[in-house]
Every structure is written in structure tokens, then in C-alpha cells.
Amino acid sequence: MKNNMICDVETGVCGVAGEDEMEVIDFNKPKKTIDLYYVTDPICSHCWALEPVLRRFVEQYGEYFTFRTVMGGLLEKWSGGPVDPANGINQPSDVAGHWREVGEQTRMPIDGTLWFDNPVHSSYPPSRVFKVIQKQNDALASVFLRRAREAVFAFNQNIADDSVLIEMVNTLGLDGEAIVREANLPSGQQLLNEDFSLAASLGVRGFPTIIMVNEENKGVKIVGARPMVNYVAGLKQVLNIEELQPKQQPSLSILLEKEKLLFSKEIEVMYDIEQTDINALFEKELSPSCYEGKEILGERYFVKK
Image (tube, rainbow, N blue to C red; front, side, top):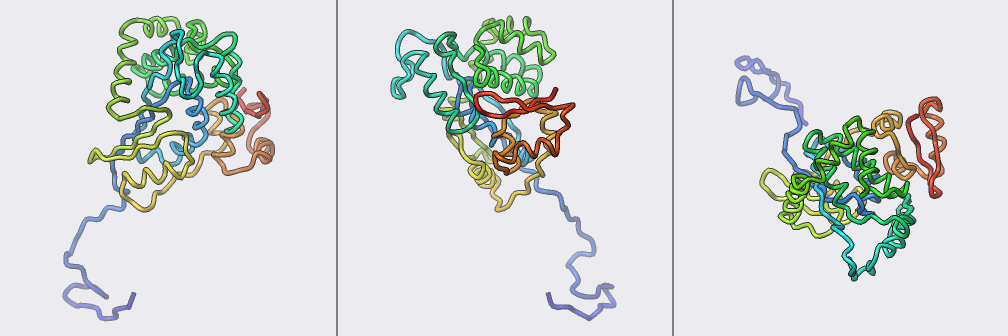
């Protein structure tokens, strides 16, 4: 910029005077309303695999959008015939190999042996419970969904059983029996049907699907568990801006205080570290009197005591 050494007596300005004596300027980020729809299901293995990336995306870019979880209805029931013959899923036991493969590829631990001896008969029961809780408290509904996924994938529990669901809801400080009872009423299914209608209107046919829509009702749809860069690029597109300002990741202690349980892969993705660095990070940032490291299916995980 070339300096202007002339000071104007009339305007009182040394340099170039603006057209107005006073103007209002705004240094705040432009507020654009983005709705993010996450269409998912409690027993969707690729949704479980997406958890590490999705958590970081929401932590760092969540201020740009309103997050809404929508249940998609992956498995209504086993009717005696093929459920997904195109992918070789003809009976419950066929799911086990698929789950095991997803777990090995993504390192989000999946047991899957329940499909042989105690198969999930439907994903609708936990989905209905999610909807009943969401009606009261959206944040607690998200916690419930996370606990349900931990239970079915890593800890091999049948989350279609009322007793499992009741105990899980109780741990949230809610009345498990009352909520599961309500979820089993026709009104519980109606809440779920509303999500199915929304997913259909969004053109969703597979899970996970993330759709971001702006004020002009234009958006992007990202199908499948994708890398972080895909979601950031999609957000830039719907905002029509070239650069985003991500928030700093929270410290590991703050993150675990909120999440209660995190697997190694989730921590690696959040902080851009290698698997071999996990124990060093744990020792550096977490007090052994408050947190402990455990192992399941060959993977480390950390919990708040």
C-alpha cells in the first residue's frame, strides 16, 4: 500500500478519506444457517466406523451447523427370507463376518458373535427408544445412541432386548422402564415413522448418509463413512466460502470427561497421532486416579473411573 502523506484540513484525515464520516462495520463471522442431517441406525457398522471422524468434525466445525440425527430403519425384522441378498445377508449369522471385516479394516472394535447365539431381531427397538429420549432431550439421546453402539459392537450385547435397553437408559439418569414402555407403544413407532419419512424425503437409501442444507435449501449429500476432508469440503460448498476456521480440539481429559469412553482409533483421529503414541498421550494428559486404560478385541480404550 502506498503511503499518502497529505493531511486534508477539511476531513481531518491523513491519507485517503472514506466517502462517509461514519460507517458501521461488522467483524463477526457471517451467520449462515446450515442444517446437517445424519441419517443412521444403531446397528449400522459403517456408522460405528464413522464415529472417530464425525466426532472431530462436530467438535471443530459444529458452530457452522445445526446437527440433527435421523433414524433410518436398517432392520425391521428377520422374516425368514433374505434381508440383503445382494450382500450375502440371508440370515443373522451372515452379518457376523461382515461386521468382523468392518472392525478389522477400521479398528473400531466389533465382536459380532451375538449374531450366532443371540441375534438382534430388529434395529427398531433401540431406534424407538432414541426417538422417545430425543423428544425430551436431544443431547441425552445422542449419549444413548453412543452407549447402544458401544454395547452392540464392542461389548456384544443385544440392544433389541428390553432388559438391555432399560439398564442402558437408567445409566443416563432416566427412568428406563417408563421410556422403553413408551417406545413400545404405537406412539413410539409413530415417532420413528416420522424419521423414516424425513429420510425418504432427503433421498436417503443407505447409511451413514450426511446431508448439509443451507438457507437457500441447497446442499450436499455424502454417502458412506468418508474421510474428514470430504465433510469439510461439503461444508465449504454449502456455505459457499473458501476457508473455514476450525476450533481447537479439546484436551483429552475434557473430551473423556464428556464422552466417558473412547477407543484408541477415536483418539488417534482427534489428535492426528499414531497408534503407537496412545499410551504416551494417556500418561501425559490423564491422571491414573481418574481414568484407566483397558483392552478389548485387541484394541485399547480409555474410560473415566
